[in-house]
Length: 93
Image (cartoon, rainbow, N blue to C red):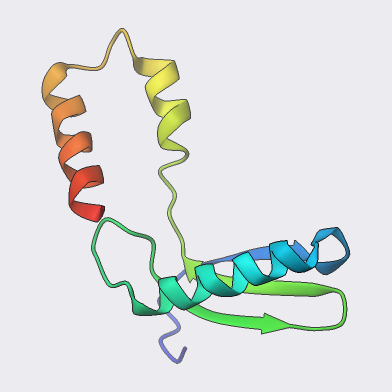
């Protein structure tokens, strides 16, 4: 990445905690993320790894977990906002 204005998140995965099956699943997930380009899905940039860790570099999303947002605001969230979230989720699928 050459644009210094782009902020990224780096997910660090400890290889010692992964089974061979987990590692294969992670590889498949990365392959899928490389092909997906959608405004409602986090953008994947690159993968790095060393002897102990795998580093996934992705778009920084600062909005927090959707599930936590729903739990915290479920009684306060207007139907229109829920509709808007559901439309985005369904478009991503």
